[in-house]
Length: 252
Length: 142
Image (cartoon, rainbow over all chains, first blue to last red; front, side):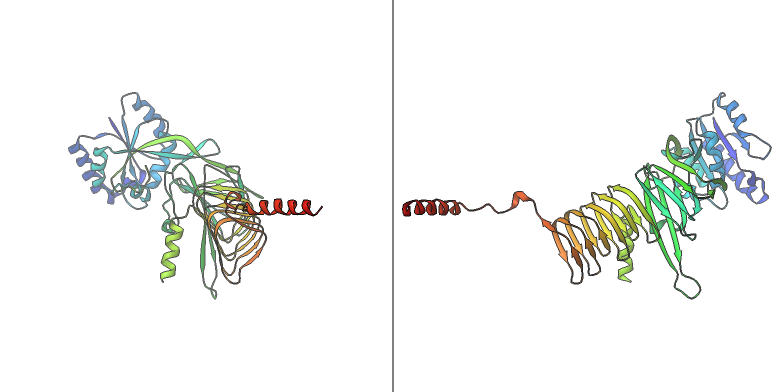
């Protein structure tokens, strides 16, 4: 049985037509199943655990990056293939996984091409799929307990990524799903009268710890959630089985 | 324009970039190409290529396969293949390499050793014979 998790924003009128088309395509392909809609009042975890015992074999997230990332900590232990039907804006992860938007995603789902993807782990208890960002103001970063990186510039932006989809990705050699976390430090100098210059630093490590003189906010891009320093991130042993398309941009 | 495209290609093949705003302390060991534009204290080891930019300051011993150096290094260099020093390079330490190219203007303060001790020329045998002859001559005189 397929288990479809719909995001809250899909109840908007503009998506109703597309949803009808997707549902009829899924019925044609014979992969329709139970539909659960996310809401503030509903705990999907409980209803999912009930349905697992009834024979759920594939979980499909219908929505955008945020929907997928919100579901990660719910579905990571189930060891089931995870599909994605991207609808609307902010679908960078779907693009990396080679899944087209809307109705065409149903064909990818039925082809069932599965790829294993590592998850990142924060402070030994919280899993993330994409990346986290923070400002570099008096920050010390320890990579694999081998070397330290000291950053004092307020304008520096620090990114720790498991899967990275930022627009600057083309300037740096990042292999998503390589079994390493990528540490990217962006620095912008210049101003109104001076020429603007941008420089990058890029490191790879399996374990990255961040400490600072005072508690600094870190934005977890997955859920637009804020956590605070000190943190320890690492590549987790937890692997998710994603259903991917042929045009994926992620390593095997 | 041509320069920009080649630089972009070089960064795309590089696994580690240490930018000008970054200071690294400790043992930096990797198996990929490295570009350093910032400051490092400790050791740098790579089995591939190393490029050190003109604004960089390195207080470390370095091991690499090939190296192109334009910045300042205080430490020893062990380069397995080719070492290239550009006019802005400043080195305060010993060098061990198989192949070296030093541009005019580069500063080198230290010993430079090329190739292994095994490959050094063997003393010819005639020197021994000469010694024997000299000894016999001196004996005769006595």
